[in-house]
Length: 317
Image 1 (tube, helix red, strand yellow):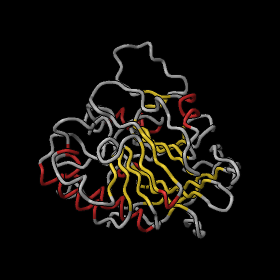
Image 2 (spheres, rainbow, N blue to C red):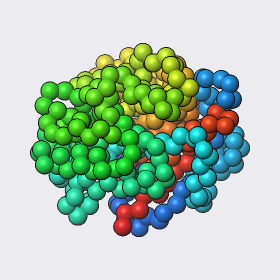
Image 3 (cartoon, rainbow, N blue to C red):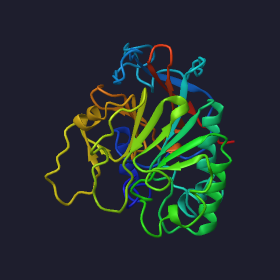
Image 4 (cartoon, rainbow, N blue to C red):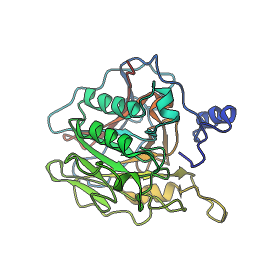
């Protein structure tokens, strides 16, 4: 989510921005129902190692109805050998705005995202940027979040974003976040990628390391495993205009997405859950937990190499 927090400035414009697929304000928590919505299936032949995407919703490449029009459907039954990834972003753990929205507990959104991932029987939770509101949080909140992550019962991969970049004195270095064995922080506990040999899978991303502009998908990682997931925290434009100098938008476009050759590109920075790109690679923003009310569930199908994407509702009770 952009620095300056659209949530607190320009609220009226924020909601319109979210509907257009841009950063905007959050929808208040509460009143959510359990369930999930099938969004898309991306077919990828098992013999090929380069992912291919599609625009369709529901069944493969049908494009019948938008996610907003379809009812939420049960999560598809998991086959043996499938890998399930729960993708979320922009959780903004803090001791201020988020905490007030959750009865004083700034880690509640994080906890419910991970509970939703467990309910979907995810192997890995992938959290793509702005997990924390800022790098000045007190140690007790950082350590409380570390306990939530460590007690999640699954592997957790984190890509730091523009609100919580990896730098001297950041939340990543002032507490116990890197201590749990199941927590993998790109740029802190790992370099450019986190390997999961048991799944023949790598998750690659470029963490934010300061508050300056950067290219989230620059120098994509070459495929070394059957499955390759990419993660990026920034702003999508089909053809980015990088001629505007005074712009810290962390831009990427269709060509950058295609160059990853990934099976799925997990995105953060926008509050709205939406698919972007031209379909060369399935690329999705998860949206923030409070506004989207869901977590993206990505199923890597062992039998046919397809990628299923659905959204599972967060239960706030």
